[in-house]
Length: 445
Image 1 (spheres, helix red, strand yellow):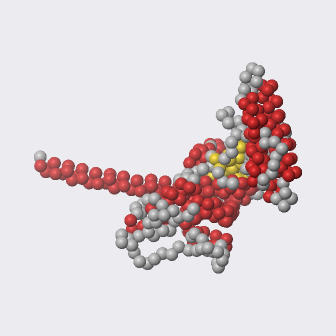
Image 2 (cartoon, rainbow, N blue to C red; image 1 turned 90 degrees about the vertical axis):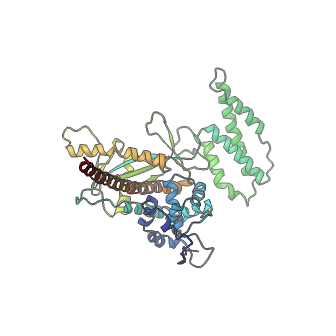
Image 3 (cartoon, rainbow, N blue to C red; image 1 turned 30 degrees about the horizontal axis):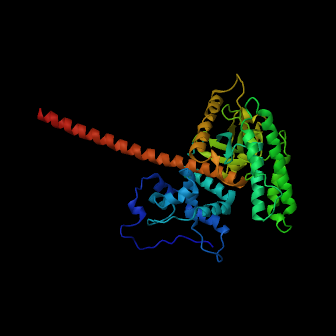
């Protein structure tokens, strides 16, 4: 059931938070800049008006999502720090200090699932509006687009790891359903794992190869035995997992759309040509940045191993949805070869050209500024490793990371502006006092 924050007209002993906080603080200014009523109107459709327990206020949950990526915190650390930080509480709409945690961490998971990708797009759109890109009077919109890999929170996948995990899962199912297995193979797997440790030694390669094959055979035996002995009324519960196990056991080295993780079967393998990291496992994220302002104007996730040029239509359509207009010029790197135009947008790829104009050369150079933006998204805003579940979690994570970086950009501008005004005032006072003492010295001597 939808619930709203109740603000009492009665003042506290020392006044409200708005009277106690520094009104020049970036989070204080951000709290007043965001249009929270927009989120209330858009998200109230996901709540019942009469049934169920009263939910947490929408502003509270929305601000927690923003703070999570703004400060690079996990759900557990976020709710703990919220109870200690009065600026976090003011951003959430609180009028007085609250010593307790705002919600349990799992409520953030449910709220993300409730508002979905459309809700995250709305948060990204609001982050663009808060930055208020200046209108220089020209109708030519120039943007840069690039892709990166949003890695999933999985271990580096090998066939041996997957087979051993399948064996462990089958033993867990057998224990839970009270199935008596013909053999558990616990000691056998332990002995085979010991042989695999010496696969790089002079005489251990052949034994390790045989051990790998034996572990795969054991995993297949256990999967088939579990399928035979599961009760008919319970087999539907484990059928999706058993199908994944069968796919892992049947896949070969040259297959496409392989499974690299049992708990994240939608993970894909990407090779971006990096010397230090040949393969990355996750999903492809595309970032669109305005060349004039540096604001992230679009962020999308792709769960398939698409060529970069195939991602352009979806990215430009999202840009049009968020900003209500089309980009005129799109500058990309050579990985986008194969597409030159999309609707009214011209796509420019760097190629050897003696007749290139100085303005276009400058725009190609400005395209490189998207690389450090992606680096900051990964290092500071939780795009480096995604902990959210499934394809939906990938889509949510990339948009929240982009929105958080936009919010941080405008917060830095406010902070710099405040410092600039204080430095001007300081310089003015120094000049005034210097002139005053200079006149005193002159009159004395």
